[in-house]
Length: 416
Ligand code: PLP
Image (cartoon, rainbow, N blue to C red):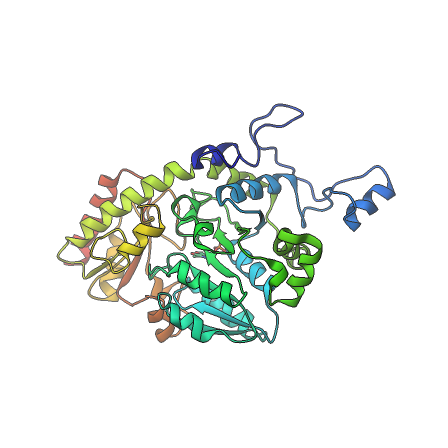
């Protein structure tokens, strides 16, 4: 299976056909629980003496197919699907850290993640130090005896800065702590985190993995680069004695997912599995369209600044080229002269939609400062690359001439 290329794995891994009926579309096991003929059998499954499904809050065959497909695309050991990207991040963190522990994180993060960190983890006794994404020395300097993990986004949302993955992974390895990367913006099609020493990769599957803005989901994948027996999290080191390389996902499933109930629904897993089949095709088009739109905006006299790593003038262009398979993703930002111009621009769009999502087949825009980051102070906003005159665009897979024409007419309106 690992010999298959990306697009083949996206279609055939995890589930190929139903062994009983020959159905080639993944069956949706829409059931809460799974029955056994004897009390002994059910007790064996509960105790782990025998493999089997028990209750869909813990695992479900449709969800397993999704987990196997994403694990195959990431060339990972195993995966755990969750109800959302936020649930996947929370599950990963709670698997490794508890009150009194410490995390080192990039400060260029999606607003929801910043809020989860401050409103849940910091309020519940997990200390977090934030560092500049690109400064490997800062990660090293922030590590303490009780640091349990390093967290970064592969491409900061919306700052679009790129961390030096191999340098951070080396620092993490030297301190025996895992590097966790949220690769939502880059997907396994653009970025192979395992090759750069990342331990665990997370996706908001709601975005490009699903592809059409029609489902909420998240997933985390253990890439097999970290030896959990050497983990500084005592619980993980203990788990590794029993589960070996599966320790992280075993603990995430049994201790966190099972107790918090942040499981994904079988129908959502089915929809995600279907979306994955066209991930490669879609990502190519997202990237090509984003580069075309970024180039157009970069040449437009009314646009102050364009954020897109595909532009040769972008400070992260060389790193992005090296890490992301020669493509630069579907997200870009640009700045106008004021918040009012941004609003006028958004209100003048006819094709692109104004909403809080990304990675949809449709082109989407948002004014992050007054929406996603509205509860975050101005200093933290700016550290995450958010300004009152900035618009974020998730470039869809429509015909690029139509997207550019829509932006051109809206810019004309907003600059009047
Ligand atoms: N991570 C990133 C980079 C995101 O952009 C988002 C959502 O926009 C999330 C995580 C959260 O994902 P979800 O909305 O599926 O919970």
